[in-house]
Each structure stands twice: as structure tokens, then as C-alpha cells.
Image 1: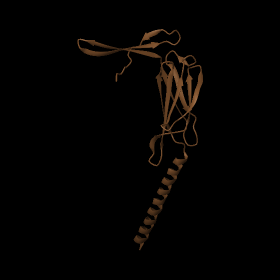
Image 2: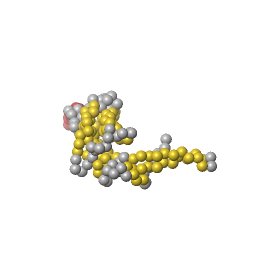
Image 3: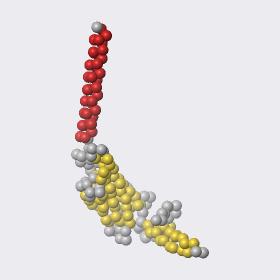
Image 4: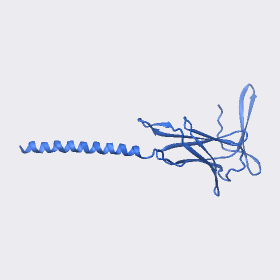
Length: 182
């Protein structure tokens, strides 16, 4: 009889323990849904004829399967900055691909740092659904001259990369930079 009583207590203890663990995991899963989601933010820069295009992409783990997906409708703030200043450039809403694009027509009012070049930042201030996020990038103005040469029936492509100093428009060759041909 004592063995049956002990077995009965163990059985009920295991059942209660199982319900306790299930309750904790359900509460944990529900609590995760209440927290703002983490954003994955990227920024790239493209040089055009007159200025530059800043492009930021925003994604998050959303949906039932928590797959990383683009986020539409978020206000992304763009800034230029240096050690001594931070200037807003504009605010753009992310589209259905999670992309925001801001075109800057000239370099005259942009933050410049001798070591890092032009610096840009994209910022999402946060919301009830998504956490705050920011990403920055540094660039320098450059020109790449490409020449096509044929020597002894061997066709070659040569490239010369030149950095342009924004203050005096002095041009100096870039050394040690990777150039890819497609």
C-alpha cells in the first residue's frame, strides 16, 4: 500500500510539474510578443553624376514562422555628421520591399571628416512594435576611369581610381582599393 501511495504522489507531481513547465513556456511566448521586435537595418551609398543616393533597407523577424521579412511604412531619418555636427537630411517611409532612398544633389552642406570622409546615418526612433535602430556609413568621392586595351590580341581592362578632395578638388590616386569587374 505504501508503494502505491508513493507512486500516486509521483504521478501527480509529474503532472503538476508538466503543467507548470507548459504554463511558463506559454507565458514566455506571450511575453515575447509584447516586446518590440529587433530591426535589421542596412545602408548603402551610390555616387551619381551630381551627388549621391543613400539607400537603407529595413527588415525584421515577423509572422508565425519568424522569417526575416521587409518592413513597410517605417519612417527612417537620414543624417550627415562629423565630430562637430549632425545635420538632418530628410525622412523617408520604407516601401513594400523595406527600402528607403534619399537623393542628395550636392556635397556642399555635408559633414566631412579628414580620416573618414563623408559620414551618413539612418535612424529609426522606435515604436511599440519595433525597437530603435541605426546604421552609419562613411564614403569618399571618387572617380574610376576604365580603359579597354588590346595588346598582341589579348584584350585587357585597366582601371584608375582617383579620390577627389572636397575642399580643393585635388585629385589623388587611390592605392590598395579592390576594384571588381562584371
